[in-house]
Length: 157
Image 1 (cartoon, one colour):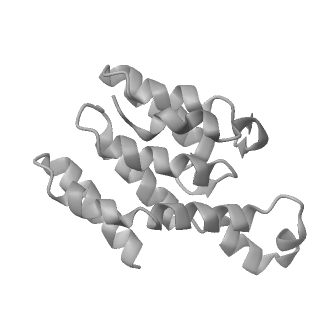
Image 2 (cartoon, rainbow, N blue to C red):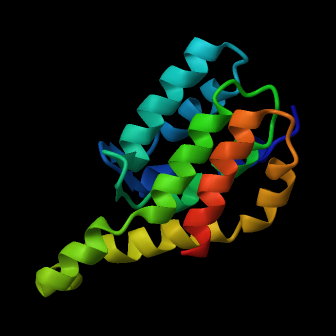
Image 3 (cartoon, rainbow, N blue to C red):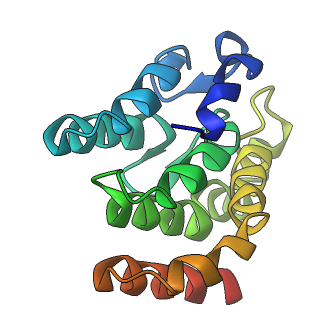
């Protein structure tokens, strides 16, 4: 399978943080999503979601680096959880937890960890691949098309 996953080793995962610490598990979770086994893929995506978009709205440093791989997987018909991947991308595009909190507590902007910046980078990473939407809207799978429409709506807001 020719995917962006071949570039996983180019990302310095050990230097990036996810919700659990070093983001070293992300490559294996992304690879598991391509397994072809629906249960394995769904379980791996659930674990990945906890690491990069916890609670569906809290992103971490590794989120932006993970997004291009999610876009790639969402386009592969053999991936069993494409709808869930598109919903995760929408959650990332909608994420404003840190930004909203920093407006109320500006001291957050002075922290060593740049949570607001990570959130903005993650949203930008989703938007940078918006060209993929047209291809996904042409899919025969109606659930994929609906999830793509929802994501497209989030990207136009």
